[in-house]
Image 1: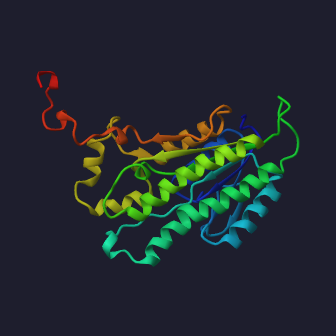
Image 2: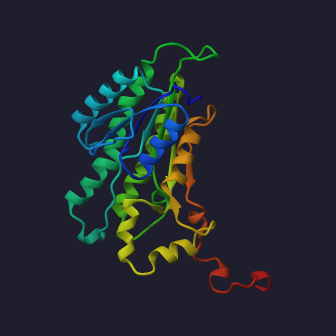
Image 3: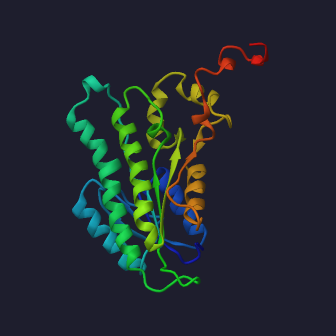
Length: 260
């Protein structure tokens, strides 16, 4: 897919990874609409909505698509975090995270897929124009972290939604993939700065030796959106953090384990 003149929606595009996606898509020549609770001054088109509100999402997607004249790419980036032990977690807290990260992503994906189905014209190969949807999951969706069960479950569910959607929407020439960030320097991650040594520990366990940036993850998201023969994939953009193994012998000794 060529991004010059492409029509793009980014949810959660007012800050963090979403805002970085807006910058990169526009630099590639796309026109970008943002769906967010906050203002998005860098977007070509913006609609204020909370992805947990189905009625608002349906209206906002319709508005953005109408103003862009169609839809080629959707990035589902809106998300929230949270921390609570399972035995202390309220149902309201569970629902808060699920309603944004999973239910909200489902509603947005559905509306964007319907808009892509209605795209006029055909591609150069004679197929339906279709489009690309990229969801932002997390490596937390395939790791087990304490006090983050609702967040991890929402991201694991989103990954499976992506796979199922890829199977269903392929016949419409709509590709659906996900990018799974690791620790990324965003406002959400900044909350961990109150945990002494946390950032340093994460850095030491990341193969590329640093915390990721929103621009790093946006680069992966934009790249995946252009891959015409890739669908149903969850691609980790985490600098190798998810490669860390606590049972690696070299965690104990930096010497080679050849003598074991």
